[in-house]
Length: 354
Image (cartoon, rainbow, N blue to C red; front, side, top):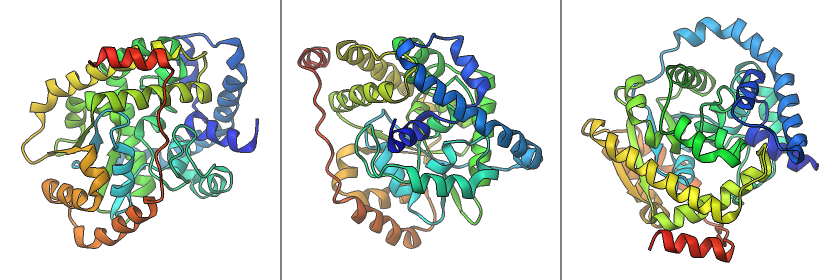
């Protein structure tokens, strides 16, 4: 395995806590051909575990006493609907704290290993995400679910690790949750704020799985402000089906399903996620939700960000504008990879959404 491939695996799923990995093995078995990946995930987690104990010893009381903002800006919407791009722009605001790659790779130890992890990832990370060729780096923002997956098996990433059972994990860990997960989410958010919040005014959370967890988020953060992105379903489903196949090949502990089955499962999960949001949308107080079309974000990003700041009363637009505009300019050279499914899978997708 090349160094770049090694870092791709580590950033996507490495340094997982041993207890989390053991919990995962109760949900599914590892395919023999995926033993090398399982070994890497296990070894990296064991290497970090002593630092996790050290972090708990040094920061335990501070973590428990940490008062996170109760009004985070939460980016939701189905995967591949522009959530990553919006997260990048919101995180460009110097006043915004958010989870970043050098934190989510090992949140259980990131407070004590912050300088080391940042330097290590800057040295070894590839310049583009392996799932879609989006430029990224150690300090780029990352979805919370990726960091949470190091701490609990009750995340959407469980279905990525065990792709032969994705629908089961989606129902178990996205459409439903447990009190234990709720406490882990609060713990993770406190870690994020301690890691990134010094001198910052607000917290940005990006997690597509939270589209189905609105009630949970509002219990933890009563004044949470939501940005919901939406895109033509066929485009986001097609793109996610491809990404899930690539992730399964990168960090999966089982062989990926066929492209046809991937499309069917992804389309079904898409509908279930949207239905879950529709059922809970009414819980969001007035003034705490703004809905954004994917095309508006892509075609008029700066105007869209100004609209979000105004609608959700995020302070400091005049200070944030320049940094966000610079991030927009930086991304103009990016050309999205065309998403091409196998003919049988594309035909099935067309039939499902006709």
